Length: 126
Figure 1 (cartoon, rainbow, N blue to C red):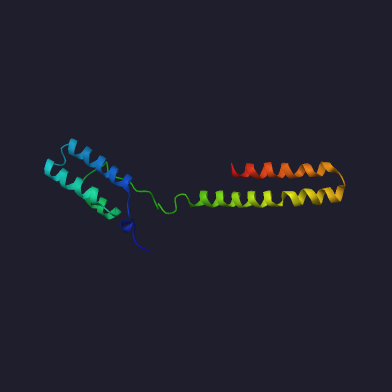
Figure 2 (cartoon, helix red, strand yellow):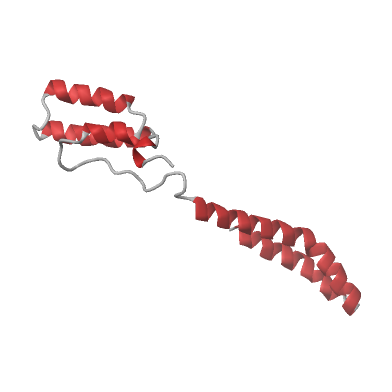
């Protein structure tokens, strides 16, 4: 697996870097020429290493990167997908469960299970 420096960045990370460079320029740490040079390199940056190199000789503030952008929402997506699958399965089985309950009990009240199961299944998606 590649290092963190090889991870590609997006617009948000470039904007964070530009804002931090502006703070350093306002504090007098960067002259106008150096500020413009680093701004151009920040706009053209492709990886985290490109941004990190711009701040190697500067104190805070420095842009921060998320631990692993590809995995940040993975557990939430898996849980949502799991709930959707369960919801779809329950909705599909609801008529069969209701008819089976009716056949076993010979009571029309068992058919009320169908909408109840569908309502419960739809609430799992929320």
